[in-house]
Image 1: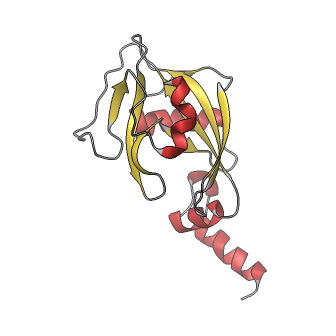
Image 2: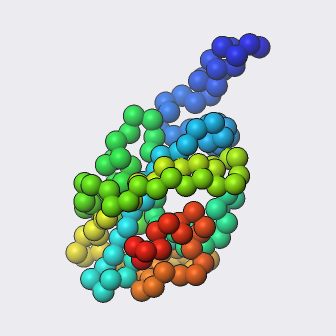
Image 3: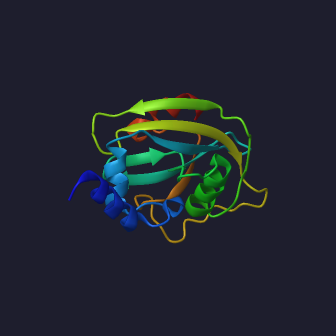
Length: 163
């Protein structure tokens, strides 16, 4: 199989890339190019920051700001809402201008380079935190933090000054 045939084969495996990629193809692409993602900085009236627990293969265990990788031809406004719905359970309002843009380069090859765009987001007035039966060490558990926790995932150290 030559390179052109291999590419055609991969394209057939992907289908509609705007819906996301099969995980192994995503990992492969992340070894070739930076990933662009949005992160959602959400604070409440008391100044606390909403963080989510993550225990990922490439990030390790710790707290992180909710976020997600932008899909092909997806606007960041769409990804912000998709992250909010998926990780928090509700849509958000957000400032249209990012408050930070960071380049994060890790030591690993897979998922090792990100362009991360941080947006200030606002929850609906009647929002109630609902962890859907998750415990504090389950992937996706949400918690308000008054101070930046020591056990933030390493790639989110760039956000400590915002928390």
